[in-house]
Length: 159
Image (cartoon, rainbow, N blue to C red; front, top):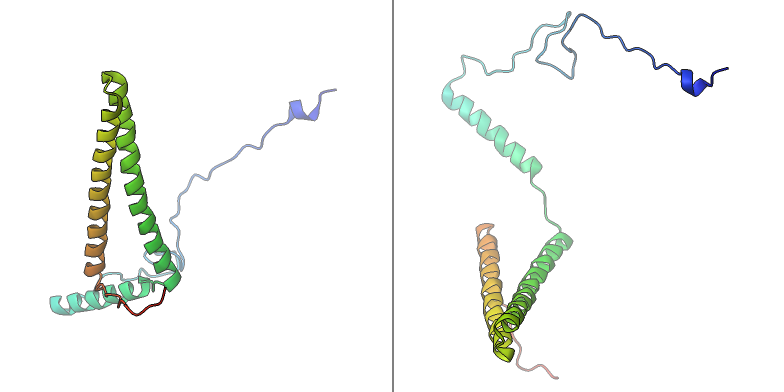
């Protein structure tokens, strides 16, 4: 007696020989057997200016519908993420300079000078990277219509 696992035969799939395009409410541009084709293009009697005006209005309505209002939490998280990126730029540059200085000291036997030079060079590069990131973020904020506000400083604060 054979086991059922060894004699299992998968069902044969048969495909129909004729092809009919899909029709119905999900596909309005394809005419079914009992439907008339719908017109998806603008009327030929419509002038070019009217068509452009209509398309501009529908595009602005689409933009307004898709535009998301940024919540305070999301804006705070985005600002915190950018701050962490600037901090990572600062530390990363110093560590890369430290590693390069160590490699220079190892291969050229210039005991502390490669390390010192690498740290200084890494610090300079990291400050430049952080500054350029901050400038880019300020340019993006100005482009979006947000002007930076100065925070008033109170000299009369008690320590």
